Image (cartoon, rainbow, N blue to C red; front, side, top):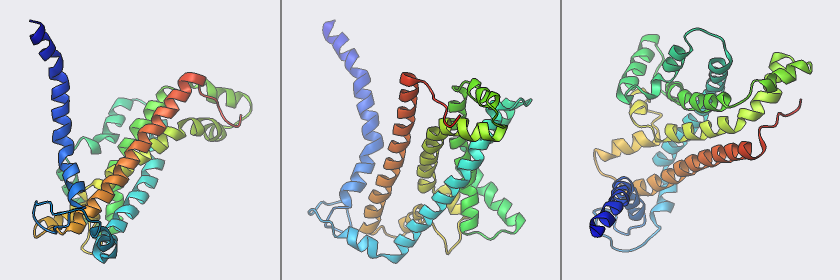
Length: 274
């Protein structure tokens, strides 16, 4: 019986380990083969870093990666403004149907990407906007907004409205109270949401495939097109670089969010520039 109880206690840990291996083993394989001397196949022939210099010398790969960075940066900038203002409106506004509005605002992350991609492509075709960087930025902004909106709204829900009321009592107008009091308090949440949205934008394949033009493919779309023929070893190297950037963005997002919550728990929120 003791043996069975010990085995039962080990099952959850074993299941978690198996799940993590299933998720991360393919990622580790890609990273490992970015240092493999053999350009093709699955045989390990030795360690090398030769694919990384070739990667940065490959014009097509670097252009596609720069396209991804430009799209992600512009999308996150637009989403930060729209998502933050939307979160303030949902949390502080006295509007009927707030739940319905919040559901509509978060719809882009609930709708399957292939459906959203087709819908955006059809919309751009009807409006007459040619597919390219503009359609990529608009599309990525659409699905980045909910990430920032939800994180900022959760932050606002934990703030006491009395801070803004105190600023108003001291003579500050609504905009001054919002800028000097609310914005500093929600800034960590905005930055956390931006970093998460940046990672999601950088990795997007499906929506980008439908709305990108022939002259402006993002890196995920470029990799997808190469999968149909042959995957050069430089793709593994670029995938490793992209993974590093993505994991760094997500880690920074979590760290900023955690430190903000920890600081508030210890000291409480302190309004700025009252």
